[in-house]
Image 1 (cartoon, rainbow, N blue to C red):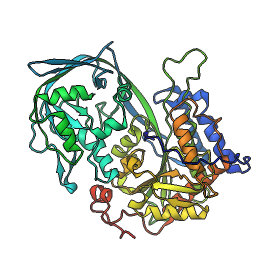
Image 2: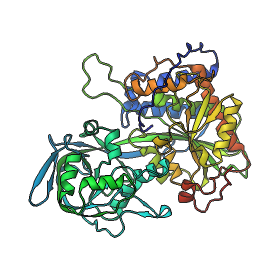
Image 3: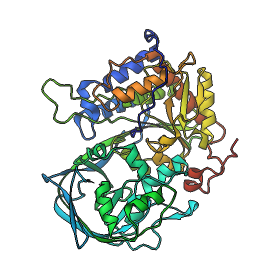
Image 4: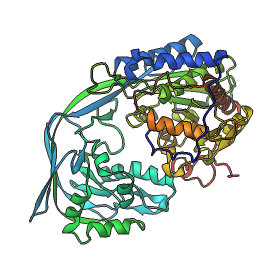
Length: 544
């Protein structure tokens, strides 16, 4: 899952009881899947690596043993191309030329800039235009790009979205429309400047530590860059001192812009000077597969409809520059071998009594690179996307605690939420609302590309309460995020409760089975933003 902020610690964390011995066949089977997928042999399941290919083949062979139908473009696999860009330069810089003065910014100091799309040295220069938050949405009456000439220029954009907007809508618009709007307007790049809120949330030094990281670009079947804002040459951010210099010669200084942005939307205007990025890039083409299997439905009238269960199989690979003898493998046991194991157990259970609708099992790749595998599938589905009526996505359940509730991110947006509640109740579990709505988790995992195709979707997680009514599961998630998330310690020796893992699998199996057997397909609720935006003509359900 794309990383949110760390959870706040519980005031009085409870000490969880020692996990019960593993006693059921389901618990043992679940553990076996996690043990294999998180083994050192798979070297962290980085995309394009031998380890991830082993994982993909393990998943495919499990599907084959069950007698499912291959649903990829070539057998079980949907092979996807990526361009992995790295800096070939020892130093990258940008020059802010304001005529009377010039300011040179070094990547990793006052500048964060990504590698380019093409190999070799390059200089990308252009004038600049401030575009406010860079948001576009007709339904919200927002178009920050309207009336601004951006052709061949840089779009200078505030981070995030204004306060007061629904957090999930704001996260969606901030994630998509800045790059899409700038690209559509003919901009050559986007320069992000930070709001006061963002500056308080994340110190610049920590933000700048991301500089010089490689960048992965999704490629279409024609080998060309694919995705939101794919035509942009530069994506950069500058620190507050550079932003102050940039706005010094404009009609409004940076402090005034920030103050206005803290109160709401701000209008854009042309900026003085030019911005020139100098860098050299090396590009390697790699490939990595989604793995797909189909269980045909048994009802002639409903089998054409498909319920998807998805989980990502990739993780973040190996630690660069590890010292001799140091653990260098990001095993990804919880993230997301546990989610993949859930998918595999769902397939095992459902083939024993196939439901009325068809079920597509989708193990995605490149989630850790920005939901790229799911994004590719949504753009080039191996089944008719109009047949897909729901997606249930599993990513990083916290299985070190005997959880007493589940959270369905997006459950309040469609009728899937009532199905989740019923399946949870069958396991004597509660269904809790999003405990941290400000984090906008609904836009941060592989269901999100399905949402953008108009498919009612939920992202399922274990909740914060335990079976005794306490908050030890909140503390367990806090500890995992602080100590193990995207660390080499996310491995099998964590205190997994495999009986809780079996319970988690049963809940998900119940959800998929109910969705696939229901008389009516899931529907977005009337007036829901995402249903209105992406499925405007689909029938809606009255919101309870």
